[in-house]
Figure 1: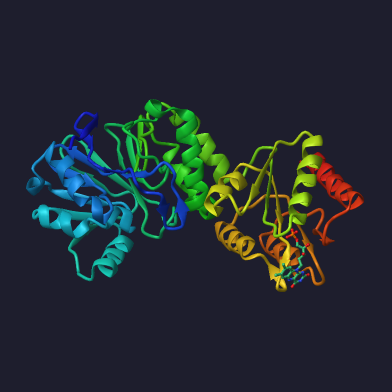
Figure 2: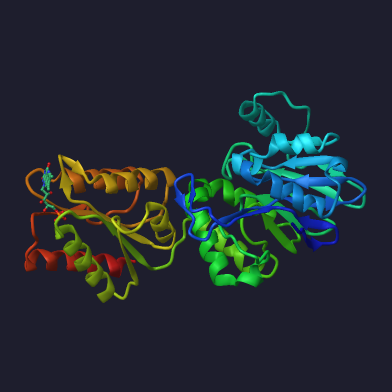
Length: 390
Ligand SMILES: Cc1cc2nc3c(=O)[nH]c(=O)nc-3n(C[C@H](O)[C@H](O)[C@H](O)COP(=O)(O)O)c2cc1C
């Protein structure tokens, strides 16, 4: 297994997970990578690791550059098992290694691996000299776990930010320009929407620091390494963190007998006639994790559910639970649906929308059984009205 030299003695030594399709509830059609980095200087440093079943691949790629037994430091930027799962095997192969991490990560490692570890604990702003180069650590708590930190190498202008700026892509390409902006940013958006979305305030704080650093390379822990598209990437991340979305609409719904679907399509019609580009996602054919990137990229979001047994459909319930946890803000939208006698489905959706603090010019549109043409026209009109407000 080969390593890839990124820059003067800095190597990618990670693992490629070609078969990964499910990542803690998130569908990953392109697979992923777990990126680890080796820095060769007077001291040899491994930054981050890989998932448990990829330990051998990590060690093989390290051996391409250095004898693992002479590695001096392991920097743990984040303890989540997709990065730390190989930790015990790494410690076994690297007996002289000293662990460099944050106090919170040390506690987390000890909980996960049921042992005490001697660590060099670093605070935000601390530096470690490894020869000609310096490693500078910046804590970025809750981007997206409490232990998160990033490592910066000022002499090389390289940032190793772990999960920030990541994307789930398995590829022979190691760099953004090898895969192209469109795929890299699409997957970065999907990653942001599914994993980082709730932490916009913390991302903004991290961007305030990162934005000041001279950057030639951002090497995250998943996907391709950013070297050509950094000037485009940082403003996009800032917009996501600020919950700024373009003038687009998303309609998400499920249906049992087609009535809520008719309403969804009438809404689409109304929005389109107001000149708003619309995505329509039925929960029978789209996984919730593939819909939330559209939430990120849409200023308006409409959610439809029929009523089943005094509540919303379970598929819509799962979507609402996921969505609420991701805390999307600055959205416009309303609930809609068809019902027979109680109408609680759309009402439950409306209650969650209210809880999320979205602007709702129409609170909800709830129609008994199969909508007739005049009712569909009212839905179309609501779409046109809201489209004009966007
Ligand atoms: C199994 C089942 C349970 C239902 N339970 C309720 C209910 O508790 N309250 C209600 O108002 N309507 C209930 N309905 C009626 C549906 O909400 C109604 O048929 C609606 O028009 C379905 O919309 P759809 O065509 O978009 O699926 C139920 C329908 C089915 C099939």
